[in-house]
Image 1 (tube, helix red, strand yellow):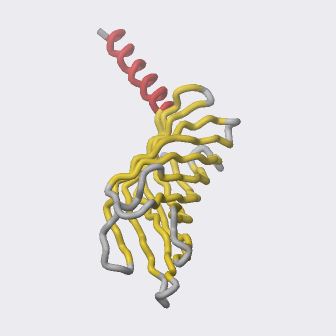
Image 2 (spheres, helix red, strand yellow):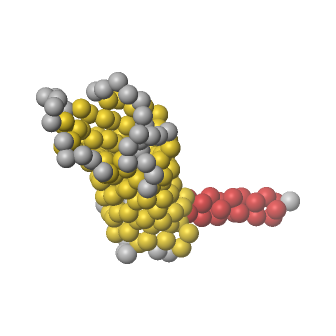
Image 3 (cartoon, rainbow, N blue to C red):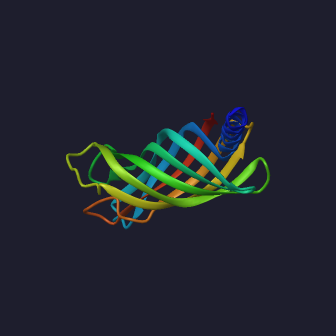
Length: 185
């Protein structure tokens, strides 16, 4: 009986140590440099907006130099528009719950290349004009670079491009460059 109990304790301790090495959970936040691409008439001057993202991140180590990093983020994108016949800028800001799933390829212990798809669900739309025309779902792809500063602290730079239309009434797609800082527990 004592041997069985000792074996169970050793098994639990070993599986917990292995689990801790294979799965890490953390938080991240950062700045978005967002814009919208598409066919715009010459009478419209478009500029990007600066916004933010924040949320949860996990890293599942599958091989020595390969991990999967799913995330759950709140992220805002959009653009600012200036029309020739209107004196003020019109800002369109879209808030999404985004779920990127990044494949991480480690170049060494510090740097990683990251690429993967992203599904985003619209939860808010704030604009300077009375229209609610944003699509409620967006699919896109991301690519970027990660840097581990310590075992727990990391930085990421990423470009995301929407592959589906962001508007029901126009040929507009979101694009965003993100800079993030995070902490893994």
